[in-house]
Image (cartoon, rainbow, N blue to C red; front, top):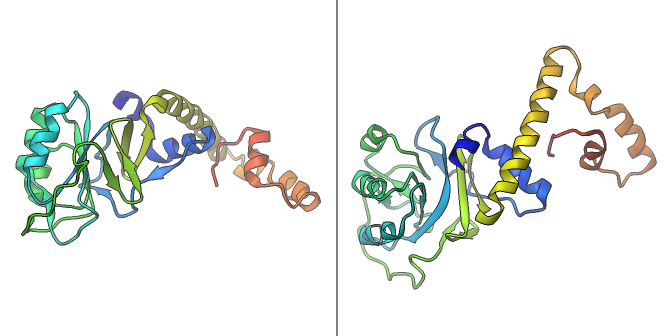
Length: 230
């Protein structure tokens, strides 16, 4: 999964989901990598944070190599929910990265570790109080509007994160690879002087739409083999 995603991007994965009729489940727009170039791809290892690091220590007991620890801290921005020690322990258990719907701290140490971390930002303080533990603390995690489990995979890069059903990953990545190949050809044609408008026969689309106002550009693209998703 990680090797195939290394040649792709989250926009391509999102377009592939759309092409296959799958829900496009993106994390919030402000959920970003700690630094440019960080990428993550793997099975979701979910956990719901309640103010104590022990839930992470428990969660990673079930980790499989390459899993991504996906932390639900409710999108809170009044406390950091993960730092360097929790990350190091997760990595030691085989986790390949962390996505947290919340904040991180120990930024310098996290950067030195180098493993991919996606969060809403940084804050010096950790939790100042304990919350009640969620009854499904190790079974699921919410990230924005989406609830994910070990039946999901997560992909992340400079454009953000998104989730794909684990049993559809092969289909999604295969479709993303096809889209990527077509887009590379289109880009090469643009550089050689054939505009995108010419490639997608935009004049024909405008003429057809004048006759049939219900015709969408996406339908037209399907007919001419374009790969732009709008």
